Amino acid sequence: MIVQDVINHLEALAPLHYAEDFDNVGLLVGNRNNKLSGVLVTLDTIETVVDEAIENNCNLIVSFHPIIFKGLKSLTGKNYVEKTVLKAIKNDIAIYAIHTALDNSINGVNDIICNTLGLVNKSILIPQKGTIKKLTTYVPLKNANSLRSQLFRAGAGNIGNYDNCSFNLEGIGTYRGNENSNPTIGKIGEVHKEEEVQITVTFNAHLESKLLQTLFKNHPYEEVAFEVTTLDNYNQNIGMGMIGELQKQQDTLKFLAFVKDKMNVSCIKYSKILNNSTKKVAVLGGSGSFAISAAKRAGADILITADLKYHDFFSAENDILLADIGHYESEQFTKNFLVEYLSKKITNFAVVLSTTNTNPVKYL
Image (tube, rainbow, N blue to C red; front, top):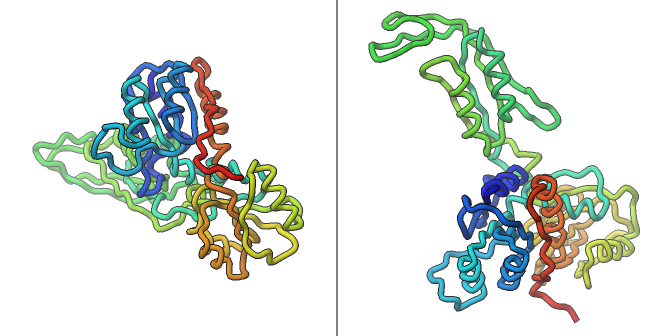
């Protein structure tokens, strides 16, 4: 196996196409074609984590947070970022960051929190817009079933809990090839009429290249007529945060104690308790103040997140309970999840869970 083989598995779980624009995800250090010796999974990549990779003979570090976030203008070892990158390069260790690509995955960071807290009836809190596309093409009637099946096999036509979804309209197509053409149906210089089917399918944006390759490979015409448009629909399977429900309504203070225990946190900062019971719970791992309004609109009793500032708590405005459990704490189980996922995909290489506590925040 090579490093790219692991990357393929990671991007099947969390396509980089859906990472936030501000983020820096993907392979940040190293050669994707290097032979793989082992994989170390961590929440953050710091020097001691690189040391851990060396000790475990792992030449790929899969990190949740990116060690390189802003542009590097030099590599002199003057700060922890440069020291970490230099050590990785010297020891031929690749570093891959998944960050908001996994945040936005329906099976990612926020799903992990929901499952830890036993939430049911889960859905994306802030669905992404502009990530669903539509392909329209025109194909001879006799080739329509075959082409449609190939597009479905490549990932098109999935809408919510349904697959093989398409719209089809029969009509007559016309064309005339010039002297440089090589028509598969009809003759050069003659107007040809053909019974055709207009096939329209939707697909997730990261599949566009794959879908077009499939179209060109399986379409009988020399020149393929097609259109790709981006839809305004929100993608219910991709986006920030999640919202779900407790199986039974709980006393609010007891629920906060439950969160503290299950999420293994030292303390929770929270706003004024508005109701004695809690049922509907919104979660967003990492910095989540931007999700307060969305959680209110969704009717959540509480938003569990991190990095709330003093004035953020005023935003509760007696509409919702805000609970800050800490940045590291909200994302700490992510590395366990990734180890479990990769271990199922890669059975002949060691996938090692980092034992380094990379939390820079301490509590007294």
